[in-house]
Image (cartoon, rainbow, N blue to C red; front, side, top):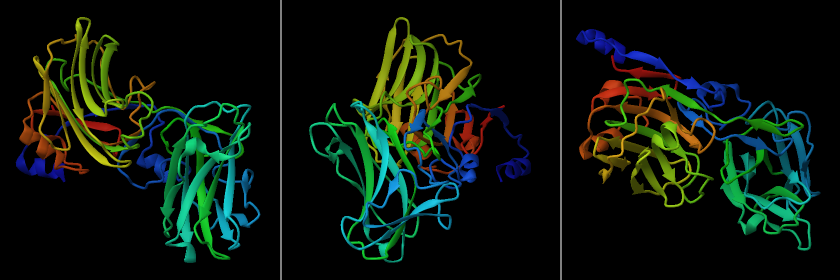
Length: 411
């Protein structure tokens, strides 16, 4: 549509710039395979996540029910009539008595190290279980103390529907001598012969539930994602702006390790321009650094898991400023300007190795002009929409609609 309009007006179209990707991003192309990932369909985003290993050896029951148990109070079976990933899922049929627990043993050792672990699983109701509450709990076991909920955390719960939903929670073993972790699902007040399904179980270290990594008899790893943009002509260390629409893969209260990065342009640790979320202070921070020191502006924010957020960063020779969700810019003086030789800008991580966004990018825009508070409100108003390069104020130079790996750039 935008191309047709430009032709009608007699204006030339933009040029295009291919992004460099690692191949480990969660995209519409990877989602369409239906084997693993974030479980969304045609989400129109790039998921940029850290490396992870699914420690549950049979998260997708593609071959058998190893590691799954009915706990003696129901029937657990492998079916191919329902599945979230791959071709099979676990069907749980309640006996209507006892705890009605379905068990998954997903990690054991001697002992288990006391670091955070996150569990997540997809579930779906059927018939009489629709509308009932299903819980996911994880116990730590072994040692001198009896079984207890992992880290004392409460179960994660969801009201079952006829659609697949994701459950997740995080905890850290409280005792140094624990040797076993096991998760279980339980439906409140389940009657005899009531059914629900489970698929895509993942147990991983860390405090963020990353997209599912398929396992079928052994643990499996997905490598870290990396998205790079050739930076020439987009902006300079002295003058420019960047706006991005994100869907956060964690709540600000979850505090993933490190400080997740939105963009990072650097020669080294002492010469850079970077926007990140500081998980200690719960602030969006724009930093510009050279060997003489660091200039920084910070803006406090809170957000929920899966919340969409618009973040805008802008800078000139004297100041840095940040806006969130269309609010007025917060600014701070900063005159330390690096001379950057790096030709590539990283979106969502530092060089694809650390400080990953752990979430989705819907679009990214940038320019070389200036932005006002009114401009920030206008940009936020675009929401999740693909509005194109020329919709932006502030002399826009680049726009990436994250349905593809190509950025629209000004000529």
